[in-house]
Length: 412
Ligand SMILES: [Zn+2]
Image 1 (cartoon, helix red, strand yellow):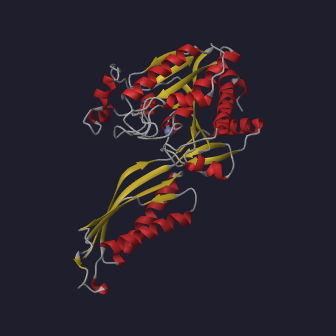
Image 2: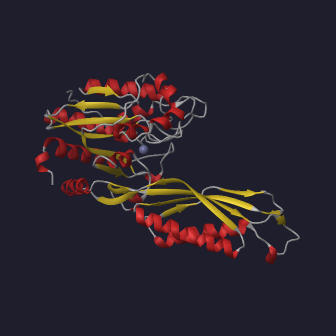
Image 3: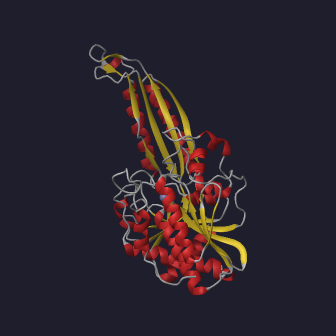
């Protein structure tokens, strides 16, 4: 193994230089595009120079392996793709930290007891194809090949065509990996909790569950001037009361419950016509499945009562439902011990955003760690994390990997 120390911040800047030149701001690295392929090849080359055994799988995940005395794998990494005009740290921080942590450990401590592996997931964001977590769901074998065959990007290129064009010609193999014993992902928080509380590490207890609905409210379109207020069946009046009740219910429930109404449409959408029809979206998230289900039922009842009050009809459909995923309790308490040993100011928290660790965590004991994001900004060129926080996350990751791969008998 090479032993020279490589600067974390410098390597994050280097990875950010692999971006679609047609996008003016930030980092744009959509899966299987030119900028993505160049980044993957450059990482492959860098990892080879550092002494990793480098391989790719059929979907385009990149692995760097340091063989241990046993074949049980301690896996760490994050995703290479980005949103359009995203930041430098989302995904990239986890990739660079994992490579540095594993290579520095191997250089300093020699052959590990358990095998250490870095994974660079090909895709997580769903920013090119309407499919998220492609990389991690391939590693766990959770992906659905039939879905992938049909998926196309906005230009009409299918995911399979794009994958093959990027050089991954082998067919997808079902089953996933069974040799991974533990997975840990280091990521920026993408929220402002750690910064507000002046804490440097967040340990995720769970990745939040999420349900999305479309609500259809139907009343009667009428003349805005000649219909008295008492005779109206105004779909907008009902919808606005429903939205207010939804947000009130979730606000009363308190943290970490959140609800968002981000889309609304009215028909006929005319300034002088009482809307006869309104539809709106609701996105509700909570890290406990039972609570998430109960709050959705409460909202549904409140909306039905509101519809009756305003003499409207209502229907709703749930178009997305993702269960919360708990991170591994034993791993969390081991990481807490390491944070205490290091004197790191940490908190146990929930992840309100989705991550590869939630896919991995459904079948492999997993942990997810956060460092603060300045002003909570993410998926934006302004995304920033203080270099001291970046370093403190990397140092913790190194201690975690050392404890799991080099001294497994000391597992607490
Ligand atoms: Zn991410």
